[in-house]
Length: 147
Ligand code: SF4
Ligand code: SF4
Image (cartoon, rainbow, N blue to C red; front, side, top):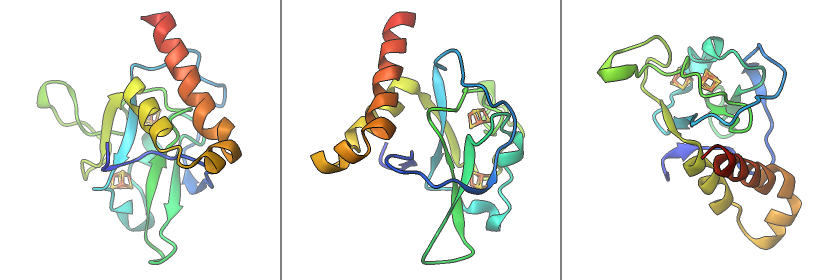
């Protein structure tokens, strides 16, 4: 999971952000979209964001050292796993979505473990408890309920 960008800790969501559904998802998706290090940021005009049907799920993260570059991230708490942002279809087919193959679908439990494992030192965890640990606990509880 080292090559993925999954937000942990405080998140500042810059524009462009996805627009759409604003109600929280009802079910834990089996898979979540995660951005890999292949994300180029599409020179500031991310091709993936308009495909996402969930408000604030995909958002821009500027590269402070190299403006105007940056990348996209996916909020693991909001993603519904619809795969509209990815270009990988079933049986090797190619869909619309990220043209740079920079979005992968990973099992939700794996993403939650990653978030928890990146929690960092105790003081960081204390400060970011809600953001980091609560979603991981919620996701693993839902996983247990849904088998
Ligand atoms: S379309 Fe792909 S490369 Fe472009 S910003 Fe989105 S994830 Fe990154
Ligand atoms: S899988 Fe769907 S909800 Fe998740 S980031 Fe991609 S388009 Fe948005």
